[in-house]
Amino acid sequence: MQAKINKSTLSLIEGDITRQDTDAIVNAANKSLRGGGGVDGAIHRAGGPKILEECIKIGGCETGEAVITTGGNLKAKYVIHTVGPVYRDGEHNEPRLLENAYRNSLLLASSKGIKGIAFPSISTGAYGYPLEEAAEIALKTSVTYLKEHTDIELIRFVLFGRHALGVYEMVLKRLMEGYI
Ligand code: AR6
Image (cartoon, rainbow, N blue to C red; front, side, top):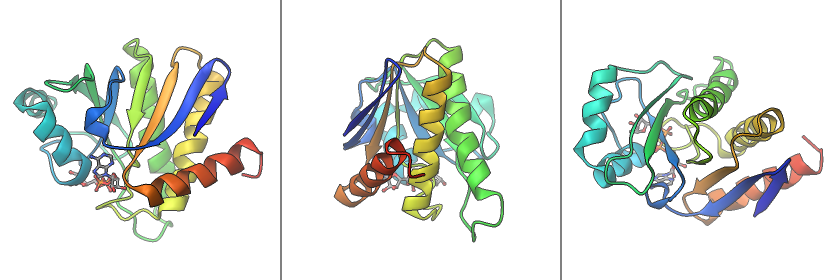
């Protein structure tokens, strides 16, 4: 599924984030930046040791912030590492922190002249964020960003599995129809 916002494209696909050919892919990292499971593990495995070397030099990343490294052996030239919130009950600033993770990743991409960026569904695996709520934040933040900035031409969400894709599609449809 695709939506046009100004001249830019927001697209939703089912797939593996490590295989994307966008200028940058985004990692759902943790504050240590030392790697982990899920998306993080897959990116470091596919991208090779150069990514971790740069992460170690950077030192760490606060929740909601973003940093950038090489893409190593990946097709993408860059990896943007961001840290989503660990979900507790939604009353601990989780929505704001998740929005920051997307927005700061996009701001960093713009500052590097990146035109195409692929995101996984941040915080919805090990960090336990309910999928539909997270999709709303991810997509609203992206649509708002594309309305305000014309430099990013493509934001692609790469969802793991049919179910996640279906939820994102439903939320994007509601958003484009003005229901949320
Ligand atoms: N491509 C796209 N999506 C994926 C892939 C993939 N290769 N693998 C998993 N997903 P998670 P988080 C989906 O746990 O919740 C790590 O250990 C997955 O189904 O990767 O932000 C870090 O080091 C889920 O919907 O990220 C942190 O400690 C989504 O990606 C912690 O996990 C995110 O799942 C971060 O947790």
